[in-house]
Image 1 (cartoon, rainbow over the protein chains, first blue to last red):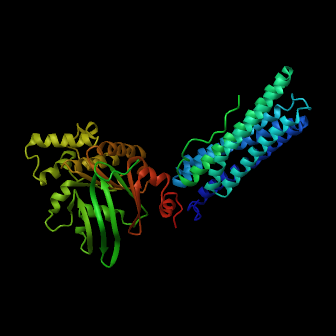
Image 2 (image 1 turned 90 degrees about the vertical axis):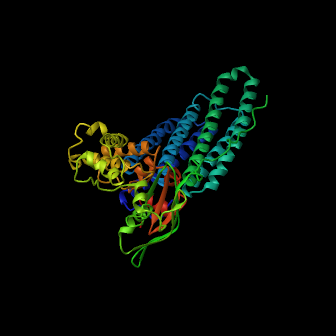
Image 3 (image 1 turned 120 degrees about the horizontal axis):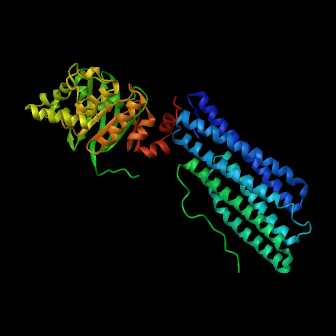
Length: 231
Length: 257
């Protein structure tokens, strides 16, 4: 980003406000995902309502960012780095909103789950959740530090998310095989696992948008993919 | 999009221009592709207009102006002593910021150029030139019933298209446009831009503009000038999405100074 600042002060302020709102949104999304994961791991049914309610704050910020971007586009016709910031902010805010939605869905699944889930299952979800939370934190840090190297690193690391997802899926399959009565719970757990993995995909999208913002080019090559589930 | 280097119409090499003791252009090396629109952008006084005035040797009309270095059209040196300036300017039409039709009829505005170049001596030949020039400038339908009325009676946008038609009447190869839309409203501007899109199929166009959005819309290649130097030249897409030079970025994003 250029450090000289815009000649028109209000333009600089508009771009700053976009940046501030995106950071706020990132931080809210980070807490939502953390709260949702904690609720799953601890099977804490009390916290579900609060997590569900908090999602509307993230949605409201996304709407505010959309609105500001429309104004910037029509008022300023942004060029070069400003154009890339505007486009990337819109994309990143949509990905954050989706991560928020997925965190909410994860939390909602806590309600029907039994409190005596096998440890292996909880542990495999914890490992996956920890990694995805780390990825989210890292991508938000990379945004703050304008670091394309970090963005690439996060993008590559999605492979590990896929691997841990497959392991968690296998745990759910084992749980189901032990007793067919576990079918309903296993279905909920599959959704939880898949939703965490999808949050990881959105983090990868954010890394791509960030790379474009910084470099003006798209990250090349196919996305790294984890190993498929063993049959 | 790749730059097409094999198709160069105009090429300047180490071009320097001085107004008295003041150097207005420093070592300009710029290639302008055939049948493409090249936009020149940069703050006022950066040398864009001085540069395009070198192409048709308009700077000859300024006593204190001195040009050195080379500027070639189709590989031929423009500044060569043997070049006939009138013939050169027949090849290179020019359109200015403010529409400047002659205080004559619409018809005579177009006929003036061909007449002094000895073209279209017969009435029906000249009629054809007038009609085809006005058609190429997308003005014919609006003025065909009032060709004998004064050109100055047209609207600003129509006057500018009349000036473009006038430039086209002598079959030029290059059209230089120095902020052709800065005095026009958005609709008249859109008509000129539409015309530029159409004209680039047959002509090489160099346009000086202060409107970034216009440069993006009409040109394939953009050059950024600053303090008499060319800072960056690239495809228009590259310049406006991801310029290589920080100065270019600061200028086009309004961070200059």
